[in-house]
Image (cartoon, rainbow, N blue to C red; front, side, top):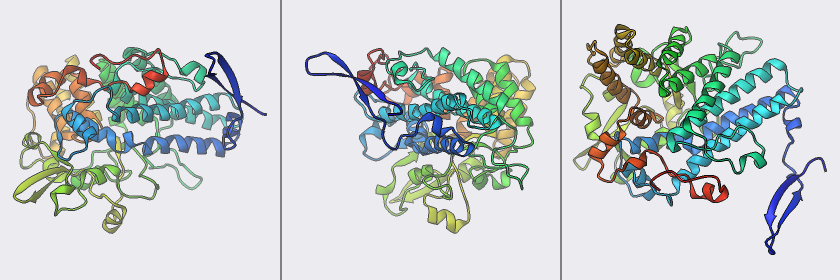
Length: 469
């Protein structure tokens, strides 16, 4: 036997016994996985494809968080989605289990990449450096969502189950420190161009892969969340200054911001199932399969939210769609336009799920500048970039408090039903209880965090439940 997996079991007498089990025939040992550039590249592709394909990333991150916040309404009957809509999930709810396991499944792959590459000489040194940096970026991204969903969680940095099986929670502050360490290293070790360069090309534009500016953008986001506003401003400024990115112009904003590899996109997920697919899961979720039956409508935007937009705002006319059935008008999210592959092919358009884009960098820098008070005119200018592009009313405020209010509103308008921006921002700024308590009679403050899945607690005696559950 080349290796054995050891498991401890409890036999009928109550005594513990260690049982050695041969590895599965399809299990490739770490030394073989990273014994060549080709195999290491395949493992790295597996990490990115797993991230893109987990249901939490491909659809539920946006769907669940939008229901938890105050922009989206669920109008069908599935109990789990009603719980998110009403913020009434409990310790016996089921959806949080897949969220928890999804993020940790990707973290496991990232940790395996880091460990495998650090312990092999079979991969070219430059690729080893790049792939470790990519894995640390992916790990930081997953932990960002874990702590913003569950709060304190175990910080798993290795794959050895004898180490990881009974880890207690780590404080959110410690996990944020690890994110910053990972992203800082990734920023230092990733190249400026997107990977995929061949002998016949000088650069790649495949934005489902990551470069230095993806790490920089995520670092700006994390620093904003930890209150290091100077660092948030500095990192956002680096991305804005790059010639790789430009805001999609007003004339093509309605359809251009979410097309594959567009100039505003900093990082996107691979399409579902096949890389050649041109549609997104989000579109298939939000756009009803039929426009003639109300039973196909699962979601609608809250009319109170839609009323925040002026009639000239292109986000209202281009990123939302009105559908009238039996005299009732439903407003649905319409950032992504094509819910199936044939529809996208017929239109000649290819869309991909955007997870980081340039507009966020302008609003991060605007908020950071307003919070430090060091450059209020610059904060206003950054805010106006977003408003001008959308043909919205320009803010003219010059004091920090008014600017922060305007920036928060612009964040809500720009990023509705997009990843978890609104939900996370409500919690980050301490507004969740007041905002949601006023419109949801079932809302309670502990609902800002999901309960830890009971199965995870049952398997780990050091893991404790979140308060209120």
